[in-house]
Image (cartoon, rainbow over all chains, first blue to last red; front, side, top):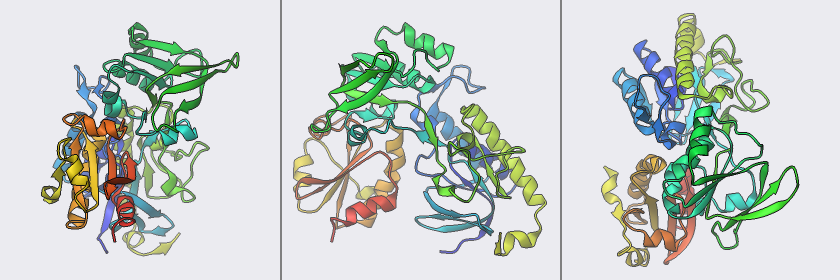
Length: 320
Length: 109
């Protein structure tokens, strides 16, 4: 399938991708957004977002993303369902391939974000969907009146723990250090909740029972004393951080040791005309508002790049 | 729209549906599940693509607690593919259409 050459192609549809779409649409660059498997990004898995400026009573994550999407479309951004399977940044114009079609673009904005990380235990993988989960809002419902555990010590772990007390009889937070990384306000919420208790300096050794096909318990090892103990849980929610979604770009663009895309002078990557924004290039701030801010920067950087681009460079298949 | 090809499966009609002769793809979902909503258009498309070959249905886990519990479903979206009344494939979480087609094609001549 052939398609027309796009000025701006955006991969990803979280706050970064949709803000880049809004700004490039308003600059009349007719952006195409390929939304990806986890369309709308991580906010689609949250409930009330209380730290996005302009919403004094908070706004539900999926509603905020619905608004961003509608706003980008209102100004002419084209957003399509699809999952990018390959990119070619070696020849211009750049090529982006989905399972259905192939697209050519003069500039590419990478906003593929980051996805929840797992512990990496074989028993964990075997029990996904049977008690192991990375999405409290999706799966909390299945644990009414049951004891569960949340693994992690950051903001998302605390948010999940507090949210899950709506369903669970008890929530044990399992953290491998003796202090939380979560913000003060989230820590206070978790400490004040009488349904939540904490296991400190605890590493998860095993989740039982993959033989039975359901979660029955988890084995924890105390990293200071090496003591092991088993706690009975029906569900394990893993919230131990994120991995950037950059596998598509491996070998074609500069990344740091963690797999994050390296950006400089704004959102520029090591490939001219390719820009990165949001969590795919940010392991420090990782907020909806910073992702949106960098999406705006990527749009402006792409616009400036296009202004300076000799027409023939965009059109011809020049080998880089 | 393709969605009229998708059947509503309930605890009451589940057994008769999966034992109806054709392979059956069941999408377990709920209103409050964001990823389920993202998967829904893909399920609609599969229903159209496999029209006449595979029965594609959706079961709301809020309204139908028995079947999800029988299959130890503790996370959604979950897709189960039944052939001859038995589970032959299980997919938990979001998956792209071509991977799903690959799984279905293994069981559909």
